Length: 282
Image (cartoon, rainbow, N blue to C red; front, top):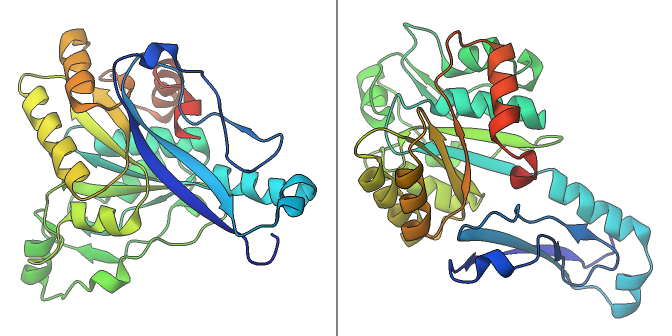
């Protein structure tokens, strides 16, 4: 990287009206010959990330291929946060499918509940290699909200320990329960996501009540400045509910994962590939 250069990410929300007419590819500002597909051109309102290179002389912008190569690697080495509208909605299954599809590392910052195994263990069983799964910052025995599980275990969760780990390649981070679950009595997961500033996927059921739960989650994240990558739905097809959430919430519909029986690494990989465009996460 040229000395003094830095990358800036700017998140903007594209309004629903006229979105269909936008080009499918956007050019990253200040970089010659580097086309970056920010989001697939679905007719949905969506948040998009524009990456800019700043602090570089005009002559340096044109010439060094090393600058363009470095930025391309930065675009590929991305962190994606996975949260949900509730607990037990399929968030871990989606995170496993995403991590496997992107060949990404997986990280669960706080595991609360160990009797039935951990989410990290389940992700491994669903196709993410063990050496791509990072150890939790905290492992708590009681299956409840992390703030309470820590109190029961006599553990003090230090928010400064919950910084995003550096990895070679992409990283998928899974929260616990919904976006407003307390990490401590002073810190919610949504507050943690705001610190990380990483694009966030909201996982939602397609069952009755999902419109209200999804829109509340969108508002809670947006109020904290959390960049929302889009909605991932789990369950039977519910076209009107899915469209209503995305249109009113002003977010992208990333896809829908059906309930899988049997649920194996093979069925998950196949259905994830069939129902999600990997370019939406790149």
